[in-house]
Length: 107
Image (cartoon, rainbow, N blue to C red; front, side, top):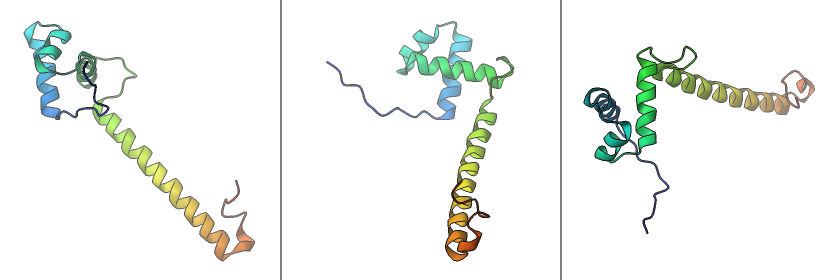
């Protein structure tokens, strides 16, 4: 009985590009390439799909890798700004209790 690791392996962008190129150029199936490289076929299938999107061959609504990275960055920035606003609101309510409603505390 084999034990499956709870941690996922991380592969470099170069490795992923090479694996995708092997699928595209070899004539092998995704499953065959995945078995040969020792990666999961579902993971490789996802890399192939994302590569198609990045080349403009995917659905119009699909996000490219660059767009995904930007979305992650912007969501992180929004989260940080929301935390800053919350801290400033609490500080304002503490320092100026008469302005409690103006700071957005208690919304």
